[in-house]
Image (spheres, rainbow, N blue to C red):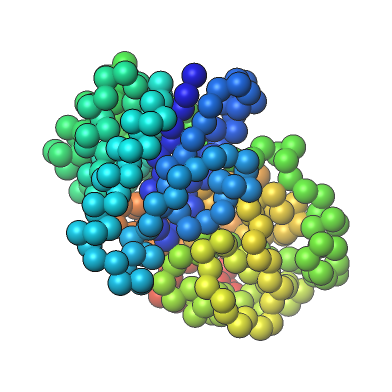
Length: 319
C-alpha cells in the first residue's frame, strides 16, 4: 500500500502538521506501508518526523529569489505529475487546497487508480461557498473534516463521503516532556510563572515586532516570565527580556512547563492548547483562506480562552 500526502505551506506549518499527524498514526498501524510527502514547506519537520518527501519551491521563496511566476508554476505542475506517476500511490491525501496551490493537481486528480482523500479544514465563508471549490470536492472519494459536527462554521452534511474526525493532533498527552526537564534544557527560571508565546511556524510578516509587543506586555505582569518559541520558518531576530526556544517541533511537547500560552489563532495551535488544557490568549491574524477571526469567536463563545486584538497587543497585560 502506497500513500501520498500533498501539503502546501507558506506562512506556517498547519497543513504539514495535520498530515504528519495522520501519517504517524498510519505508520503505527501499518508499518510496512509506503508513505511519501510532496510539500512546499521550508521546514524540516518531515525529516525530523522520519518521513520521505519531495520538496517543491514555496511561493514565498520563489518570489524572494526572483523566480518568474510562469517558471514557478511550471515546476509545480510538472513535478507534481512526475512524482505521482512514478510513485503510483493507492491513496492520495490533500489538505485545504483541493487542487493544490496553483491548480497543479488538476491532472493528478484524473488518475483513476488512486483513491483521493481531502482534509477539509474550516475556511472563510466566501471561500467555502465558491462554486469552483465545491465542484472540486466531487473529485474526492472521501472528505475528512477535522472538526466536530457543527463546529467553527463547517457546513457539509447529507454526504456519505464526509467523516467528521474531530481535531487532528500530532501529539497526545503521553508525549509531553516533563516540566523540569524542559526548564533545564532551555535554561528557563524555576521560580517564575512561564508564559509561552507561540506564533506557529514563524512565517508571519512583522513577527519580530509582534513578539516584542507581547514580551513587553507579559513583563508588565508581576511574577511572569515570557518565553518565545521561534518556529522553523522564523527569521533571525534579536529579542530581549524573554527566554527563547528555537527549532523545537512540535512546540506542544513543551506545554507542561508553562502556566499559560499566548498564541496565534491557527487551527493546530488552538486545538493543541485546548486539548492540553492550558490557559490561553489567542490572537487572530488575517489570512486569505483560514478564518482565524471566526475561530477566535468560537473559542470565546466556548469559554475556552481569551482573545486579543492584534492591533492592540498591549492589552494582554490586563487580561
